[in-house]
Every structure is written in C-alpha cells, then in structure tokens.
Length: 465
Image (cartoon, rainbow, N blue to C red; front, side):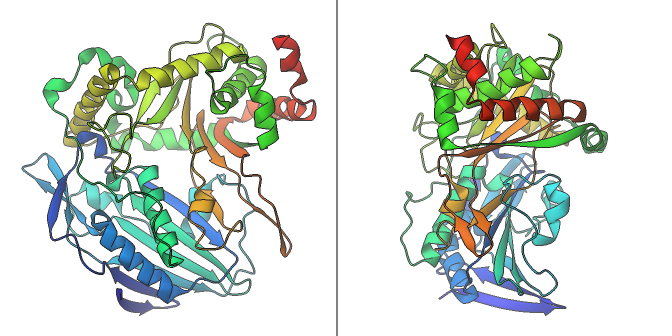
C-alpha cells in the first residue's frame, strides 16, 4: 500500500505520498545542459464530472512514483556546475481543497484559457522555481492540488511539474501511468529511461549559434518584467478551432504527398496572417521555429521512453512566397526532415547544451519574446491529454493549459463539450490553435478565418486551381 501522511490547515488538507515500494535508492541522475530549465514549470489542469476516489488516487500515485523514482527526487548541485536529480524517494505533496463556494467549474471547453495563469492559479500548488534557482534542497519537483467543487461534484486536478524533470511528453507519460494504475490497468508505454546522453563542450559548433536566439539572448531575471507587461498591454489571445473534416479539407489544398495535415494547418494560419493582418514585408511571417521532439530518432541520442527535455527549436528557411500555402507547408516539412539528420542533430544539441550551461552559470533567463518575422510552433496535436489522463472518466475529462505568447502557436486536441447534463461527442480529430496577436489585428484574423470556414476554404481552392 502507499505511504501517506496528512496535515490539516483551515479548509485544506495536505497529504504526502511516498513511493511504495521505494526504488530510488539514492541514485544520482546527472542532467544535461539542455535539461537545465530551472526557472520553468509545466502547469496543467484536468477537470472531471465523475467522482474521484482519493484513497485510490494516492495508492496509484504511490505505485507510479515507485516506477518513476526520478519524480520523487530532488535537485542537487555538485562541483559548482554539475546538476543531478538524487532519487531519494521523497513524498509528493497533494493539497486537497473542498470548495463549497463555487456552483460549478467556471470555464468552458476552451483548452488554452486567456490570462489562464492569473485566473486559474487558485487550482494549483506551484513548484517553487526560485528555490531550484537558489539551489535550495528538498523542494519537490512535482506538486498536485485536487479541488472538489462540492455543489456540482466536479473534481479538478492541478499539476505543477518542474521542467528539469522533463518536457511535456515526459509529464504526459507520467500522468498517463498514474491514470491507468488508478483504473487498475497496466501502463501502455515502456518503462521510463532516466539516464541521458551528456554533451561535451568540444562537440559544440559555433556556426549553429545564429539558430539559437532564444538561448543567446537570455538576460538577467530583473530585465524580464517589462517584456511580460508589454505582452499584456499590446496583445490579445486568439483561439481558433478546426474540426477533423475542416483539417482534411485544408490538406487537400496542397498537392504534395510529403506534407502532413499538421504542416498545412500551420501554413494556413501563417498565410492567413500574411494575407489579411500583416500588411507589409517588414511585418510578415517569413519562417517558423518549431519545437521538435527527437526521441526515437537515434537511440544513441534519445530512446523513445527517455524522461528528459528531449525537444529543441528547429528554425526553418525563409519562405520563398510567404503567401503561398504550398510553399509555406513544404518549407516547414523540409525543416522537420532536416531536424532528423544526425549530422545536424548532434552538433545542434551540443551547442544548445553549452549555451544553457552558460546561462545557468551567469544566472540568465530566456525571454519568451517574439522575434520579428517568426512564428513559434509548440504543438501537442499528436497527444490527446484529455484522453490519456481521464482516470476512467471516458470522453468527459477536460484539459487546460494556462499560457501562450505573441506569435507563439500552441496546438491541442479539442476538449469534450458539456451541454447541461449531457456531453456532446468529441471530435477526436479536431484541434484548437491559440496564440497572442496585436489587439489591432485580432478582428481581421477572426473575420478571415470565419469566412473560410463558412465558405469551406473556397478562396484557397480557386488559388490552387
């Protein structure tokens, strides 16, 4: 059985769940430079209309931690520049809040909530990144808050995951294991691998530096605040939804078998922006920076079940024609192919690793800012979070993310929609796309997008013909 202790404070109870059986044995996993996202977290929310058995949840978490001892570890710094996660079988805190005030969950089925961090922070018990930056021992790398909305009997799980544990795919696989063990099912993914390749300074290649403006332009923390305020003042969030049928219609507009539905979706939004919103060459989007997962490309670099930060930003070439759906889609696809070549991947990762180690030494942080003529693509289209972490609440779990940025495109599967006491069957092939855009351009983009949906992309069909 799981090990669990509880503390009560006001209307909340904190439980501490330890791995059972303990399997960490104090082992050390050294982190690569590209893992050192000390100032970053992954904060996500899941909402369920069906009852959650807390004792079974704690038991499932205990067994999941036993299979994933890295998550029950803590971050340590040795020899001044080498970071490790020591797998010490620490207890993970679960904050439980019985909420009597809300009548029901206050958000609709939109996945990326505008101003989500501010509006949803009461549903989280956040990992304390500043403690990780200060090398403070014993800060948990995972914190969970469960809110029971009493009046509607809805359950809300807020997950706060330290990015040093791994990227979103690592987090998703951990939560999927937890969900399946809760349902008395065996995990459907291979056992996690924690040891990772450590890159050497001598492997870095200076000619790759121009591809890494995110790391190269890192600044001291105190210089980040103005950028954040500017985002809130000048930008507004846009959420575009596409059905599976609409995505298929889009795909047929490009006569190239090599490009995917995803390539054409991204290309369509870029061309829509360049045609109707970005009025001159200085403004238009000329290339993409796509966050690419490189697990399973080469075993020597990252096996498929690696738990780490196994993603990087892949910069495309400039588009020959920024208003051509076919040209933009093909350019994106070529960049993805390039990212899979070992002659490119190894020196790129080694160079990024070196820059991130420098930033940690010099206490610099990356600015999640918009670079001119660029669209960042951070897509989860391949992963169905709501389905993977449903705890048996099939087709009724809703998933929420709390952040996006200027021209920082996030792509997720659609949430199920609740209509009174009924649930509308979910379009499992549909997606939601969210990013920030200048307030002055938002209406133009929505108008052009809605017209295309109404006319089934007729204007692009005529251009194709």
